Image: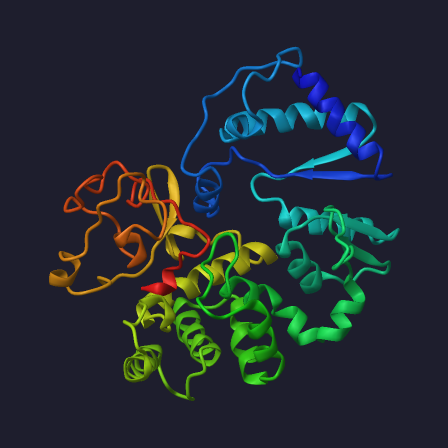
Length: 377
């Protein structure tokens, strides 16, 4: 198919399903973003070649390979947006991630009419519940087909907000960021549902989470973030993460018949520090509170024109132990079969095949899979 035919297919899809549609696009050429790691993961560390194309050009490669290059993706979005506008649709282009712009656009439309948002992202539901106060009804609906067992899920935002309560709805972005999203790590063994129930039953936790919504200092974010994590991991009042980690480790040693996996323990306080400040930055970005915040001051480091998360400022283990761990992977070191990756370490020159250079488990080419976490250290 030519790109003109591909655009026509998109337009036919929208025309056949939705009337009065407003289309909001992500942006991909705004420079380093906090979603760089997520993009690397989705592209499996591979970036396709740049393609110069017009509407008459046929697509000569697979769609995935073409879209793995951010310039190709952005140029196609511009072309598709122009074609959609030519057919009477309104298009809105975000500078980078579109979640907040989708919510802002929908709430503006909801001042005069009922609005249904078609999307799959949990971020949308969280932000709608945080912001929503329009006069008309707002719904969030999945675009995927319903299954016989689950049916088609539609969220009525106002009703959902009444069920959760105003205070819990207000701090949902904090719960979502702390328990893992595209820019922050998932906490091992702590589901979003379990975390939400914990917050619903503990007003002290809600108070601590409010500091992530307000403009706060790094010191208060690190302190309150650790208190929240201690509570989510079942710690005692006034018990720090390091003490809780040690207590749970000794209990597992006494009861387990196999060696203790490091990721099953609560995070260290230094690892949790960076997780908390990254979560704070993400919350502030979602709610648009302070545009002056810089990601490099809140848990990320710029490396090869990409923003990568800082995991900790301490070694994950004593040097003599680190020198004992090395892998013999034949390919890429991109799964938990890699001994280094399994132990939360990057490959080094001691690794027999990749030597810490020709694999994805290095600082330059880090590929973070969904189960990896900076909280495993």
